[in-house]
Length: 180
Image 1 (cartoon, helix red, strand yellow):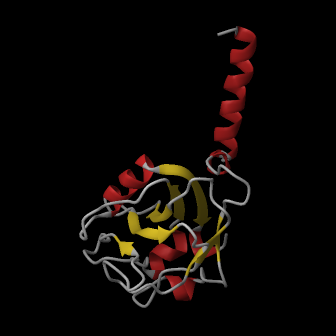
Image 2: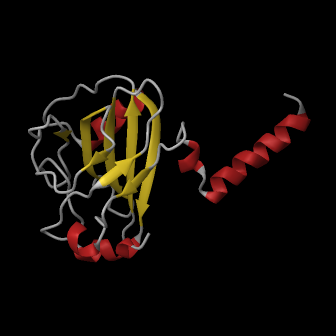
């Protein structure tokens, strides 16, 4: 490779990593972003024993998308407890996921949910102490083929399957105290 091209390429890569623009670089296609809906990320509604899954919305995905997979990670949880939610079989025509999905392996609408670190399927709400300082990352994968997993799949298995079928991904971060 020509040195005149290598140096600018290296500098651009470093700049992208240092500015945190990696998330937006993973969003192929205008409008494919993931955002909270209707104030669903309030500390009271999202954390503790009565916490429920949040409501999320997104724009049009990349062409060829056949469905979606949503994964939520607690970035500050102990190792092995980071993946707190994984949902697959979200239809390609969907542009939102409503709050309060029941903690079941399969919903009436056909959505599938992985087993959370507490041994139950569905969204594992962080406790209030964790909600005050933990960061959550929600990743929506646009996939090119259906995800076929067992009914007792865990979050890591869903993440691997989604990554292998991915056409694009969008992220949304909630910081300590759910302020961002």
